[in-house]
Length: 343
Image 1 (cartoon, rainbow, N blue to C red):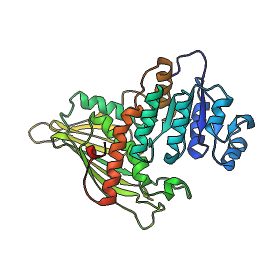
Image 2 (spheres, helix red, strand yellow; image 1 turned 90 degrees about the vertical axis):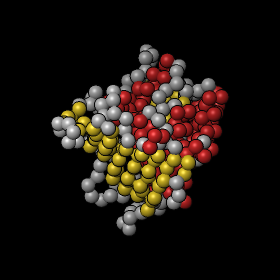
Image 3 (cartoon, rainbow, N blue to C red; image 1 turned 120 degrees about the vertical axis):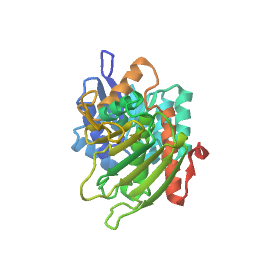
Image 4 (cartoon, rainbow, N blue to C red; image 1 turned 45 degrees about the horizontal axis):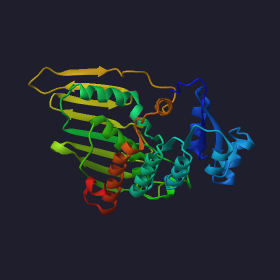
């Protein structure tokens, strides 16, 4: 949350569907104001004016033009991954903080370049890994660190959604976008929940006959951690039947029982014959926010006003990107990949 006496002023880069979502979130708050809008195409700029109600003099074709024409406190990047590098370099060259949509970039080398540029400029840099702030995952992390089920030995994640049914967008036309875009959400959640990074990953991916994505939209990924811990991530991005929540359904096995969650319920159970059966529903620690992006924006604005590194910083997110691109390499080759080899 912004702790100053005035709204922090942002430049929104990217005027597509997701950009409109971010604009609506910002408009509903009193501590932030979007003062400039940047779109690469004339069509997107005109839509922002005609459909979003943006004033003509606040719409620009390039980020440098917007930066030079207004007083801004930060940049919000909602462009496709291939554009993130240029947006980041322009932002850091102006000495401004950056909140960028995930994935951090469309390549690991470029992702490192972005992070290094931000650090060299001394700019605050945060990646929009919003699921990490969900009250359910925060509560599950607390239960795990409280030794509720003991050290986890296996985590099973099931995820099924009708993802990105938007013909012509990069989500549909570019290869492996489901693994890259949604995988990095869940892979970041895995890192946060377990408090550690995996050593290797093996992915098998495919497409369903009715799928609308050019790249594979189904996969099974097995992550190996130290001490034998395994995480199995099963995902389908073109389901037309029952779907999971965006968090997926999780089941975590430990020596003292299991923890599972489905929708907004967390269950702790123990049913081994050596002990009396136990099943307990644990309420989440705090209420869901107005919008799932609000806690993310709270953290970013607080980092700006307190001049500190935010959670989900660019530097931290490089580990999530290493998981993601190792998974991508494994999906392409069909072989296990050591994540360290990409670092």
